[in-house]
Length: 389
Image 1 (cartoon, rainbow, N blue to C red):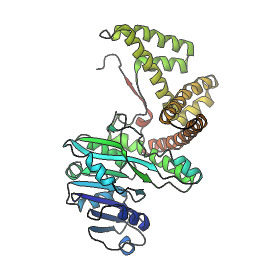
Image 2 (cartoon, rainbow, N blue to C red):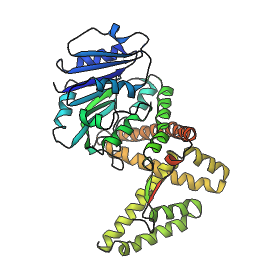
Image 3 (cartoon, helix red, strand yellow):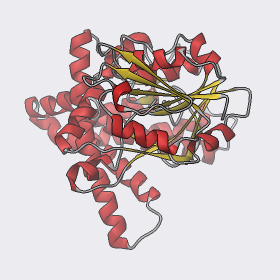
Image 4 (cartoon, one colour):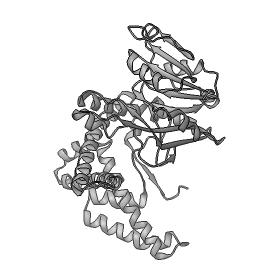
């Protein structure tokens, strides 16, 4: 732990910073960066060994604050901790256990919302920062595409090689950093290590934060073209789905069935039965993903199209329902304990919270797309196009 510097960006948050300092080992170096607090944090925090407090007289944003703290570090590792995150006593030691392999550039724990009363706490229990219960390597196109910088352990030399956080980004800067880090080493998501995140006091505040997160999609798509896509399907699944929604459900289903029976020709090295099973499973997964795409981020366009073209309303609703069903199924799979009534309530709550999140996030994506004059984050990726490898 003597080879780690903890960097805490903060603004007008002395009490949360004190809680973090109390939870950290006393011998670890800590740099608190006061990002333009009206009441300077150096005046509000008691001096202690190994604590350095830097101050920006004017707020420069979280990315700049983290970079300033990292620049003052002389250790092999950096642990970024947001002021509204509360680590446990063993958080740092546990993260370092997963950082022993030389190819590991960063390690992130699971970030969950702290339980509390009210609608905001209920909504935030499906925390936007929570990447789920399964460990994974992180990267674009992986099951876990990014991890938040709310709590993130990074090799200092790799952080400096990628020039740190992009200071012109005030939202989505952690996604941008993680995608750039992925070219310099392995990023591990370890949900066995858990930290808690302070929920927002009102549900409107929480929803507005989700909208704000959505605005980052456009700026990220300009930095990482083609990587900010909310659906990724094979053309052999997309065409039948599009025909079913836009022309005729029976015709689209017939086309899907035809591709299933033709699958052995496209997968000659597999047993024919296995090839057909893979094709059928692919259609089901694609239908769920495309249904989610109609809701997140296309919801404004989906609603407008349904209002403008009445014959499409039922088909669009059914297609979107496949995306909702996928959320419900995933929630059901994660709820392995409790009575049947408790599991049903859990699934229903998750679906409602997910839909609210989708609405707020989609508004933000469209807002960012309009501001940056790009439609890239609204598009989907279609694979296996003829003539393309």
